[in-house]
Length: 71
Image 1 (cartoon, rainbow, N blue to C red):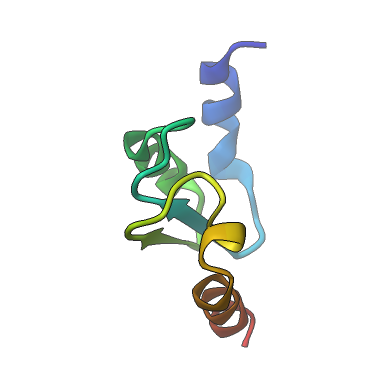
Image 2 (image 1 turned 180 degrees about the vertical axis):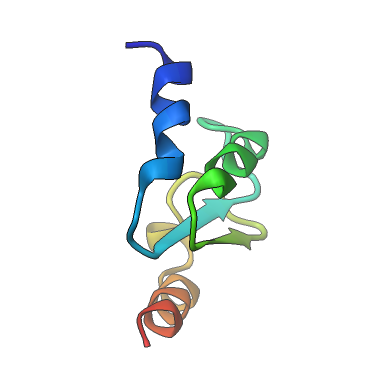
């Protein structure tokens, strides 16, 4: 399946969704994060000065974001 098929199905997600993106991600550039905002009830959090692995690069900040979302 191509990526457009995948993206067209995102709007069917029913669960609250947290999207965390490193602004300096070199593997998957930031502009792709905006495409995920079609997920209903989603929250996009951009982590500055962070790359592809926010949970490794900034674990404390990452954990705070996740815990806040879950509460």
